[in-house]
Image 1 (cartoon, helix red, strand yellow):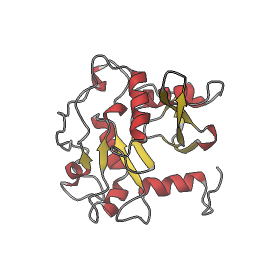
Image 2: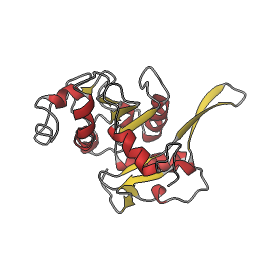
Image 3: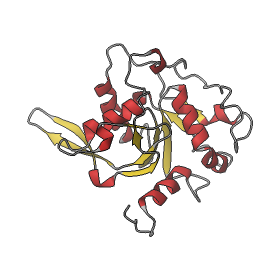
Image 4: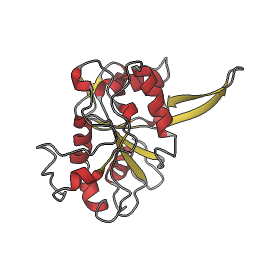
Length: 221
């Protein structure tokens, strides 16, 4: 991976941003998650060291639920049981996370944007476009760096739709493994087609960095 201006590789820079290393008051990145429990738990457990360092000192760092990240599937496990705006209570795996104090889990979850399950007239492409719009909407996500905990089918669709059409890449065919982590740059452009202005989104193909796990034969969402 290429080095950034501080001499760090892409992987090192990604880990620094994930863990908010050295940023104990107001991290430069925002952690967001799907409204499904497995994504919320993955974020809390995987980033426990980050939250142990930042949460006692700041109310600014936590896990912001973004409904547009809800998995692309009609299966029952792609539906959330969390009531709109409700408090996310810990399950057995969230109640005793190494590094986090008792009761910390529920305080980490910010459900202000959670309005319940995806609507019946929604579909995957609608939520992909909405998620991209959410990333660039400062009223929802005010940080430029977004750490998004989501689902493998959703993210494979992200790569299929927003990487250049003619580009061959494993992410378009294979899903991220469980816990897989990738860093990328998402770009937004305003396009005027004669009937009005609209937003278009694209992943910078030179920005992709596999931080952990990568892409494999994993098939579950």
